[in-house]
Amino acid sequence: MFDSLTGKLNSVFRGLSGRGRITEKNIREAMRQVRTALLEADVNYQVVRQFCDKVVETALGAKVIESLHPGQVMIKIVNDELTNLMGPVDSQIFYVSPGPTIVLLAGLQGSGKTTTAAKLARLLLKKGKQPMLVADDLQRPAAIEQLETLGAQLNIPVYSEAGKDPVKVARNGIRQAKEIGRDVVILDTAGRLHIDAELMAEIRQVCQAVEPHQIFLVCDSMTGQDAVNSAKEFNDQLELDGVILTKLDGDARGGAALSVKAVTGKPIKFVGVGEKLDQLEEFHPDRMASRILGMGDVVTLVEKAQEQFDEQEAVKLQQKMAKGEFSFDDFLKQMQSMRNMGGIKDMLKLIPGVGSQMAGLDIDEKEIAQMEAIVHSMTKDERRHPDIIDGSRRRRIARGSGTEPQDVSSLVKTFNQSRQMMKAMSGMGMMGRMKAMKQLSNMDLFSGKMPGMKIKQRSKRKRVDRRKKKRSR
Image (cartoon, rainbow, N blue to C red; front, side):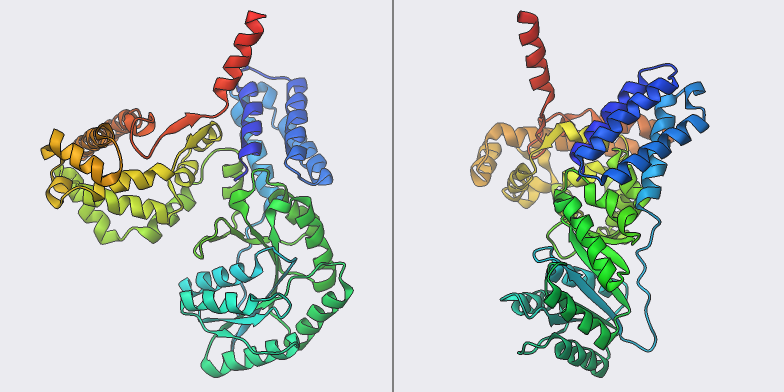
């Protein structure tokens, strides 16, 4: 997400970092480049102008030009202002007692309301709530069936009925939620344009009839300024409590995320970062600012890891590493957990110092499946004791996984190196572990030699070729 904006901002800051000291002129020149990057990212013009003016004012007030590390100071100032622009943190849903708490989702057609309703229900279920979904989209064909299917996957009840009256459906759904003891009702309403007077009147009638405690607008972040403009219009008619941005994982620009709070005055509550039902996150402006600047997001990484890794299993795994008994079976479990956390590339972006380098890298995650196929083609003994894998075994494993024998050799070699390093690290102090981690990062795992982790430079080679052409002329 935001790859294009991240790359451009990092280019600006690298230019500043290359100077021992910078002047007011350098700061203003850098902010002109930042302004261009933000406008190209489809950020609202007024938001861009106010943001850049504020950064310049803060930078001059902080006397960046006298700093020994002006580039770092500027990054911190921009990070703070980005956080202020998107903040404050407000992902809380206010629950009523006695329930149920009523949450109404509104938005344009195709913004992802139905899927978001199910994602939100799953998130609330994890927090100990008992949600119920109400299929109040009576305009789109198959909307009811879609919500019922998603509810069945989550084992969450869905209320639906035949008819054309969304007010009646909403009332009856809330009545049933009270009868079966559900404490949160999520109303999935029909998509509508804010200029459609008839449909806007309809949703106002639903709001007047059931008096929802929270009204969230679901916006497709990839539509940029269109999402922001529609949010402003919906807010004028419904008095929103917050915004949910969908498809943020596919948004390389970031205009909606950076503009919607400033334009509407309403907080971003949640963001959709993938198609799966577990890929709805609470929105944290400070974490998003760090991601935009390529500084990673350790807190989110830890939270994802806590969801996927059992504490007792982690202790057992650490003991195995210390004894050098880490096997390919353990490796497969870790790979599955990484997939559940969002994939290798997404996880690397959350690591400080790595995220800023990801814009120019292309990790072929499809080959992760090839790597797993190699392991699955091994016998139990081979997974536990990869040292026994000789030439004939390599050929058999390669045939079974649809790969080449050298792919099997490469994976086994890297695995053995990693296992030895893990065992050595278990007996080291902090400094020793840091040195070992540096060595580990330079191994085949990140060099593109390990199956499943082929990393290619996307644009640097093209730049080099252009320079060569210029020189030849």
